[in-house]
Image (cartoon, rainbow, N blue to C red; front, side, top):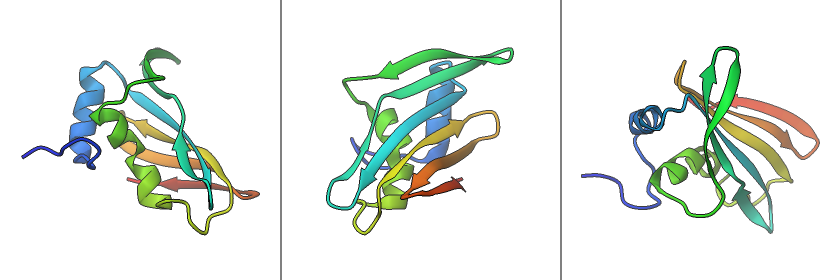
Length: 116
């Protein structure tokens, strides 16, 4: 059985899909606050070429299952943003170490968390 649209995807499947698309990094900008819910912005897939990161793909319109899976840590952490001050940051998926981090500002306070 596979997850359906907008269901959380098993994390190893996310790493496999990033690899299939030739990406080693995915960046998901996020912003939200109580009373206005949360939103993600353009998701960018990148790959490392030497010391540089090169863009592989961007989502500015249509969404797919990978997009929903990359956004999942936002909703796992903040839910619908009820009770949260303004939050602005990004979720970074790094395939090299299979690590997901979230960093930014919650209100006026910076934060950085390892999601997995």
